[in-house]
Length: 305
Image 1 (cartoon, helix red, strand yellow):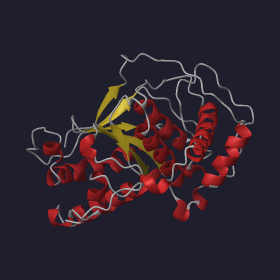
Image 2 (tube, one colour; image 1 turned 45 degrees about the vertical axis):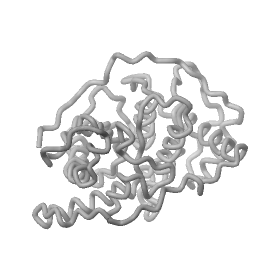
Image 3 (cartoon, one colour; image 1 turned 90 degrees about the vertical axis):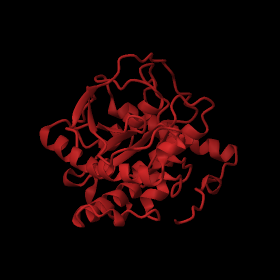
């Protein structure tokens, strides 16, 4: 496997300033978010909507890392809701800038468990079944608003770093066969643990891409090697100073989807929280007004090969 590299963010973006049309108060938005994710933390009742907020962004009230003792079965539900919103934003965008989809926490746990079994059995490829959850995700199943991976160029994944009780954002570039690591904690032990958490994706995905002929479906040359995808740590990112990793993961994902550069400074977590709450409110209202049913976004039932 290639050594983990570091890369700075591209400086070739043109930032377009946008303002969010806040029709509801932040208090109303927060109430919606609290009902959605069961958060106990309050958000300030006077959110800023200044020009520096250049994302039409969803933010949740809290992140799982803030209250580890209360997570149990709901672990990751906050980020799953965010990434579901992002898939909807992509799907219903008139002119999406980037062909991208996202995953969820079950995908992370599924591929991690499969990797552990794969390693335990000395890299026995017989454990890599096409009926496994990982294959179903790649084929466009398992989650609402899913898109088969051969139809996109990028996959944004939220990855749990169990050793540090921390979340990071992984970006799979399908054409480059690379995984870009976005981590809001840059200290040595956190980066080491984050890179380790990316290994299951790096090792397992090349096999499934070959088994499912992803390159062939994309009219690209087939893989000639099952070498792990290189993991590239992205440099120049804003860093968290408190337990706000979920906000950073959501922000990194949406900046990428909107094709905008991530600011290395002047990143106000509280403003991003407020904006996420407002975006949730607007999205919920949109679904009600346009009679959009979540059932209509259900993934197809895929045959198990």
